[in-house]
Image 1 (cartoon, rainbow, N blue to C red):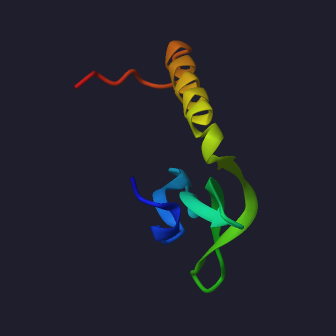
Image 2 (cartoon, rainbow, N blue to C red):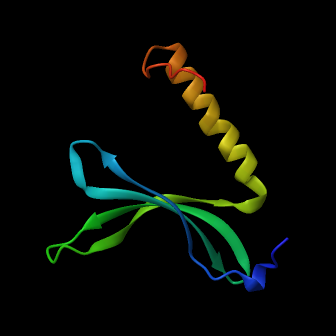
Length: 93
């Protein structure tokens, strides 16, 4: 296992458009560290007048100890959205 001190933060996990119609805002997920504590930061980024992507104050941070619980909640949200017909059911591979 890699030691925390050997990891260079932030570690980008994902980037996605906020919505298909909104290509000026991006949601970014990354592992970050503050005062020795590692956490997942999911943050909304805007595009400024110069075309640069800049972070906003809108987002959520999840401590590593709570990461599995957060992932379980997101998975339950996906299952519920599918059962309500909000998402198309994708075929299993």
